[in-house]
Image (cartoon, rainbow, N blue to C red):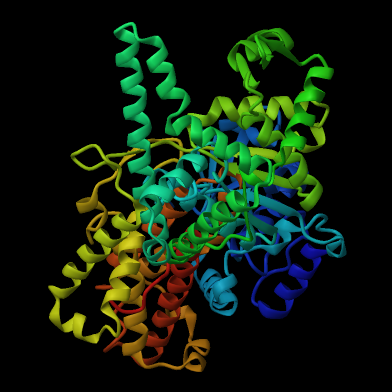
Length: 636
């Protein structure tokens, strides 16, 4: 049993602690707060008579240290009586504890404060021993925590999903950043994670692009800069399509219907439709050209993803779903009476098939156009069923903008109505708001590579202002690039996912306030402190941690101890801002401590203890930044 092993490890490594009860979801050798939670649970159980399994999960970590290290909402124990009266009774019976102070009672709440010395002797060695794994709990990903041999749970996360042959639109930025964060989070929790990039790589637009390349394309430019070249070609040929449509409209307005129709029948748009039909029929030449566009685009995307610390296990796409599979899905829905023909098109009317408010909200959806073309819903349904057969996942997350909320709800509902609750129950939509202010003054969209270049150059100029520090950095341009990427990613994750935010270059690149550069500076400063102290790992391991008695040291210790609980909480909310808020709390606590907890010039034993504390903070800061997808820098 995973939890049993955790208790055995604790007994071996931390013999200064009292014995604690073995409880479900308690991992005291990797989460220091679990030690205190289990200890408090035992005391409360003896005092109140409540079952330990009820008490343990309702002892929650606090957002601010003045509220304590753990908090209990008295009504959560489901014991008869007024919460305020119960709190007073329990306080009178509270025994002396080696780990916690006497609780603070405030109305319906009890706040628990940890005693500093045993906390220092537990939290710091735990953080320094586990290093990059501190905060992670692989038991979360087990199918059965009582039997690890049953293996890990599988999760598939679909995110980013740009359109082939188009530059990486900044609108895909949020899906990419949030999806990368979720993949890191679930990996740290022990899940078997598969990341999928479901590309927009099929449709009539590729017929338009092929015709454009024939007219405006350059083999040399295609090899050198495929995405931007194909986009330029697409813009030029699309203008021709628009001009033809406008000319036809003008002729119609003059009553020249035949001339107008002739232009449309022989125009680029109709030729593109015919070209795409050849693609769907497997024409070798058409498919070969499309495949080249796709392959070149993916290679260029990979370079951008690498800068963001993102890797995809599978590059899938709309092209992977066959026409036959989509037709079968549509036929099944029609056969089940869920879809009906309407003037040649296939419709799904949820207002008739789903009762009440839900049906009205879902409205109507087109599954197949009257020309026989299957739409996104049919394609998504087929792909999901195929994906389930391929991966047998326990969870499937779609990271898609809130603009598509209705589409996703319709999609999940249809899968359920097809009798596939086994799949629908495992699906989750993680949505997000818009990025505002991403267009240039001319109204054209700024592309992600341009944005990353701009912020990188800006950070480089800022770094140059401090000549002494700049001269010590080995590769300043690479560091500037990492700082720039951190700026973009932190601004994106700073608020709740569902909120829109305005892209603000000057604010995001500032070293003041809660920004990416500020986080990076905090990490680099901790690395600098370690270098200047010139103490070995053995020196730090031998530190007398009972010397950490200053209020600033205790507060920093209390924040560090919260980290594993923060990660557990984020697994419930899937909000990156929860981690960011915590990391900024940690860095603010650090910045106020430096004048009080000096390393260089302090007594040798005090220096060791303080450096052990700062190294623990660095471990947590590094791990938090890594889950968010940032690359912590050591000098800047």
